[in-house]
Length: 468
Image (tube, rainbow, N blue to C red; front, side):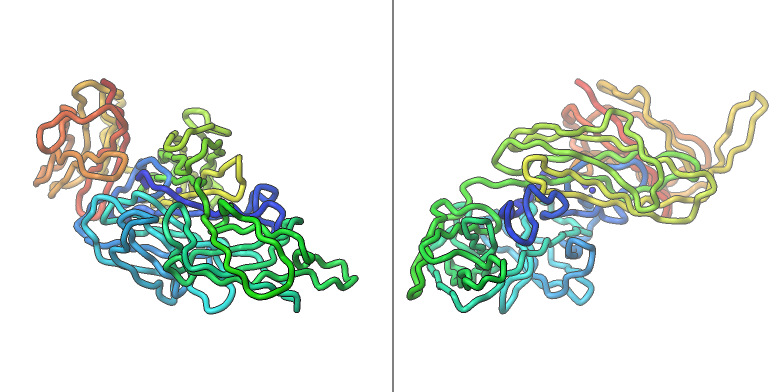
């Protein structure tokens, strides 16, 4: 799983619904992912819960929308909000046949992204929200998770309202309403038309001796949820009769987790790639999370610092993990996908993640000098020294050939902090000093930073820590 403080409001499905969602089935839930910009950084990675690209001059907000098994979701609606909910929609658009979208940059430093799938009948997916994304950001991967199914019978009661709210704001188009009977059976499903309005048919049990529970019996109560979260005044009665106005005020609290993962990276065959990511509790309740990293090829992954598991975080609390990818010798000229994930232990249906592309290049060439040391003849970037540092550190790198070179420092949000070199250099080794100041001369705060070396179409990245 790029580097941002984002809020992901995942739905909290009813734990006893027929569809199998909720804490009793931890494999279900909402997952939001942001993949780092491919041209941003290659090498060891930025940390986080949602993967984000750095500023590259591409003024756009772009990515793709898929379902929980990775299939593209065409015609999904993608909205950029100044603040969700209650803010304004700055720009919006639909995904294409491949589930991809591209929207113009909207200028604010941060925005919230909301994704849903419009439907003329029962909605198919929960909407998904990712908070506090930087602008611009590219290669966002949003994952929509499916809703359950209602078994319709002749026993139907209609409820409606035009003033209902979610998290303090009027319902908007695509908000999902669900109804559950006392046994937790999903018996009603609808999407809001917007402006606080909804209309939902609640299905009652048909009373047949078939062993199927379709919904409530007459005079049983019905529990309503909005976007998977309980409504404040959720109970309605189900005697058959005319349509009934039923105001819903949904979700005074929220659950969520975001992941800021590393940008795309490059590694060496037989070597290692350090991938750092960070996860944040973006809900309004204290929660605990399990975190992990995996790679589609099954290459070994170790954790230089013990992997965090069952970590309890207050709202807004964050934690980071370093994952070391061990690249088998003889592997080169290939790209594999690394996946980072954080999953709520309180509600197993809540998870978030990010991915990055790990590009494995051809082996590094070395020649042995008279003293037995190795003289690099390949493009390389050394670990800064000292590390951690305060207030200064040295960064050494080697060039196989002369050419234009750029050495740049980034923070955990993928934002450029300082450009240390941007010009033509000869072949050989260069050592650069960084004094811990940004491009305006101001001292940067304690934290983790990344430095990227770029020459032609090659880039290498390493991580360093400033401790004051």
